[in-house]
Length: 578
Image 1: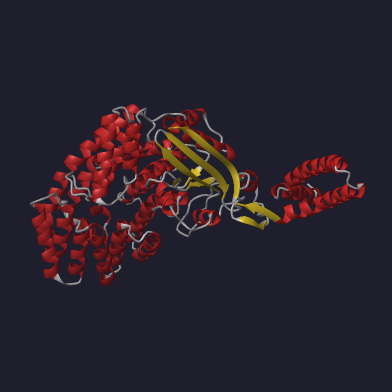
Image 2: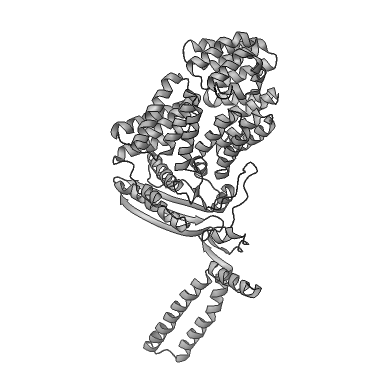
């Protein structure tokens, strides 16, 4: 194409982008009506003909002025502003960008790696609750999450995770600022008003960089139609972003999860805190899902939600694995019996195979299935990385973590896992830097605070480590894992008696409640050596300790690789690797 024809094409495209064509057409129509209507009115009122001619001249002179203003200015929800210049094209990616969206993605944070991805990236911001009743907040959040989940099932889109999107609830940032922070091309926002047996949902899709509306709709329906509304919103967003739906995706969009709206409400309440690290919040979630199942025994998402709640409960609650994991298995299997396409149920089974069954082939198989169903499931991607990490497949683990973070740079679990990898591969200072970013965004993230302390411990910054562990304890109470690491600070610093006091506290608690033997082994080994700690090592195998996999990757245990009794434990867990 010649430079002249290329320039003409670019100019015509810019006229279209700045809506000059639209203004011209509207002006001609309105101007014609004014001239024709003015003539009739002026004749009826017997005004001088010169007055009508003056109106005609003004109308004609206004045409170029309107075109210049259309070129220079644009009308936005925030008022009139100067039209920003067009983004320069960037090869083929510019041709594939959705209308109104930037031709290329904004640069990602330094922690994000992986190949480029030209799929439109969308973030669904929390829909505002206009019901006038704060108790309905769970419902507006649930509508948001359901739309998000439906969009996530479309392979032609990348969807920012729920965890990250919910951070922007009530944010004062502009949509372009949010889009730039997340690398999102488009933003979905809306409102929900629930009253008695009716629901009113407004939704709009906005091109993030230019703050231009791409699509908007208002739905005023009976409450039973809320699922159809969510499907319609998701389908319209996909269409506006030029994401083609496969027949299977279209069928999943139309699927109705339950006929029981009370069960749906309970499931939404449970989903609000499924991924929490607060023991009380997890207990509430567990109760909500159980009530939903009682009302609708065929509600697959309630079973899957309960299974994932048990996964997170296993992270922090003092629950014996033999009590927790069989229940998790039953819930996940029932969810998949009812709906084989529930990716979170497969992720829950992968967690079961990892923590309790030590079946590494099953871990890979279930995670592969979960990611086939939802390639952008950050939890499944991060957990895939963690399963590779504990098998010392560090490059593959890093690739999985970075893939999760490429989808969502601020995903807390992915960042914490990447920091763990740094700690276990001699780069603890990098881990601290990663976790500092998490804590700047979310200061009360328990896992990030705990692992910042562990990274400081490996860097021999004992004062910083102690401070981090104390803050972790202040967030969730004296969980055994946090006070065990507080004891390690004393042990590493030569304060043996203070470390022993914490060891005795854990021993006393173990007589009254379940305390993972790993905590007792780790602290006892640091104080009294391997032989004294050996009984706890054997207990770890007996109870299927949740933390036993750290024996392979934690740097402080590498010296034990020459101890046959220790290697026998590793061989029990990973028979193909030792």
